[in-house]
Length: 186
Image 1 (cartoon, rainbow, N blue to C red):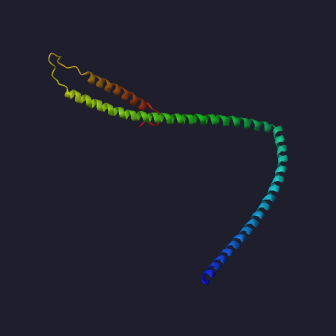
Image 2: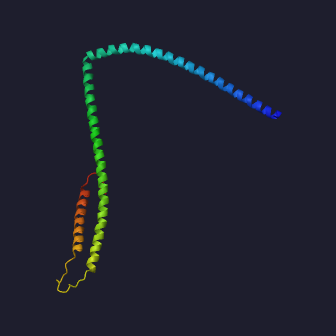
Image 3: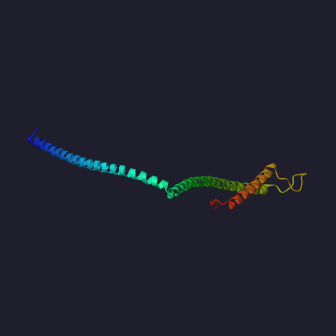
């Protein structure tokens, strides 16, 4: 081992020793401060405890006097009314929260109905288009020996009936949406 290395390690050890001494001194100082704070807190606690005991006796005497007075009865009556009002307010808040929850549920249902309505409108448009195409593609000439005006096929009649039913449902939902007072009508 070289001399330079030994001296460098010795310098590092001395620096570490000084650092540890500083930490020790700081710890001792912090400990002394904590002890002083604990002593002060204990003294204040003893003083507060004594004051509390003195005031407890005085408080019980004043409470007895208050209960004996006419004002004590009034205060008791006010406390009873206050408790009743607190219970009423709690019931009212529960009703408001329930109403808000119901409104939220109804709003979700309305949104779902709107989505279904849009899908139904699209389906009605598709069926109208199919009906128009079917009517355009229908042969205007009567079949041999048939009536002058041909009867629509059962498939075409079913499509027309379905389109009419969807139109009626669309009218109902539109009317219900227009009469809605929940604030969600667009």
